[in-house]
Amino acid sequence: MTTDWLAWHRDYEDPSSQLSRRLVVVRRRVGESLDALGADARRVLSLCAGTGGDLLPELAARPRLSPETLLVEANAELVDAARAAAASAALDHVRVRCADAGRLASFADVLPVDLLLLCGIFGNLSGRDIQRTVSAAPGMLRRGALVVWTRGRFEGEDLRPTVRRWFVDTGFDEVAYDGEPESYGVGVARWAGPGPGGREVPERLFTFVR
Ligand SMILES: C[S@@+](CC[C@H](N)C(=O)[O-])C[C@H]1O[C@@H](n2cnc3c(N)ncnc32)[C@H](O)[C@@H]1O
Image (cartoon, rainbow, N blue to C red; front, side, top):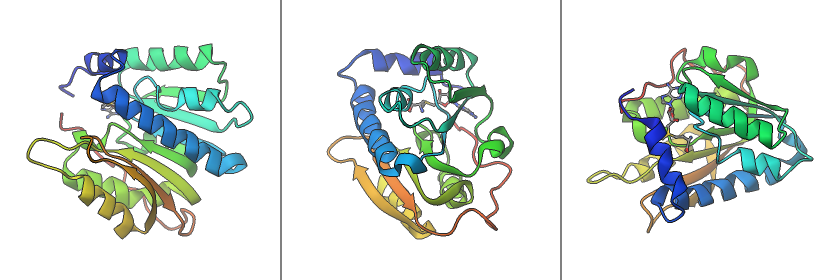
């Protein structure tokens, strides 16, 4: 990893930053997803979770839902921050694991899940790794599960329509998409196919290139 992810998170301190505006949308979509799942939100997984600012407040706002939740994050300081946020919101059902989220072994014990967050990941992967992750996702999900994902528009490259298509081509239904005119893209996809049985998830889903 070459990016300073602690510094990257500082943009959240400025409410007018692009990242903060994206967070508002991600939180709204995460909250809607939890509401739509209701009691079926039994397990939640967030990969490359950062401080959990997109998921933890939405869980805290829904005390009647207490899904077994795992956040996987590689940066130890961000893990500490996420653990502190979960503890201060009394989210006893949330665990934060310091591990490489690109490895299946880092979260295989909680699969299949009902809500999967893939936020702030796709902008740091090769197209091939994004596609591998999208097509492997059904093997990680229960029938009816939801995936909240993000991908930004880069200068000279807008992969957002391609990522949306990859989800649909994999067999997901697109529930929501927020993008233009903003440079972020936030998608929600539902897996309406059969549960994970028989679908193999590769040992390595992705490796960050930034
Ligand atoms: C772009 S940030 C996104 C954080 C959060 N999901 C968000 O949207 O605010 C990427 C995060 O992935 C973490 N990360 C990078 N490589 C990772 C890996 N292999 N496994 C787990 N986390 C990783 C970084 O430390 C950073 O917190």
